[in-house]
Length: 189
View 1: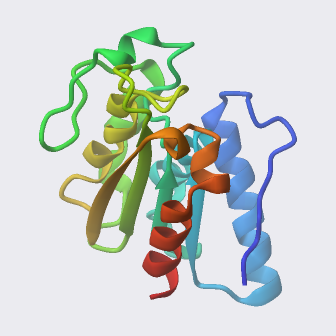
View 2: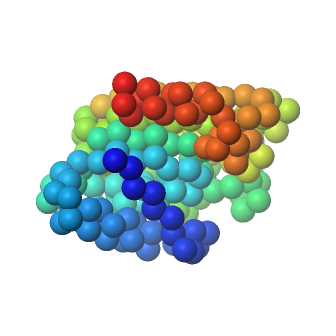
């Protein structure tokens, strides 16, 4: 079974509020269906929301625990309109970006609360391959910054860069057959 969560105000950039909303939905699913674990697929800002959730509530064992996480175009440093400097930001091998946004810094400060060796991560991001190092909205470095939050903590972490026209920000989750194939294989085998 899948549950789609769409926030009415989905561009609010209040990730802590979104984390509380996610907690509310997850607790409701726990009460209604008895879930003890869950998988999550996020696109763009939905990735920052789940990371705010995990760094705030992930260690609470009375809540259902995240098992598998598919990140599509993770906007960990925001988008290129808000933070144009992310296009030239570099990432270390462990994903650590050369510059942080204030929100990303909060996630880094709390990354030790992410449960150890529990979460398997598949990160899919786009690169239009036109010299911009972006998917048109999110820079490659912003997407690659997810790795640092899980460095030394995840059960597994796989990153896939998709290129070309179907690697645009909005095409990734809607029209890119590679995303669908990789996501379904990762989640369901």
